[in-house]
Image (cartoon, rainbow, N blue to C red):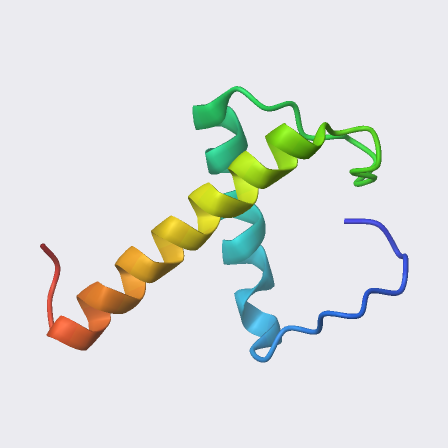
Length: 72
């Protein structure tokens, strides 16, 4: 991750590593190349949207599992 100032701060900073891992897994599954320097300016809007949508879908699934009290 780059050292640029970002406006979206993590509520639980300890979750950063897990979120980065989820991002890498999503990119690999979708066939999107993650920039080594952390700069996403050259990633197409379609690819960035696909990554964001995939990650959101996974996070919602995790939350649903936790709220239902178990793993499906």
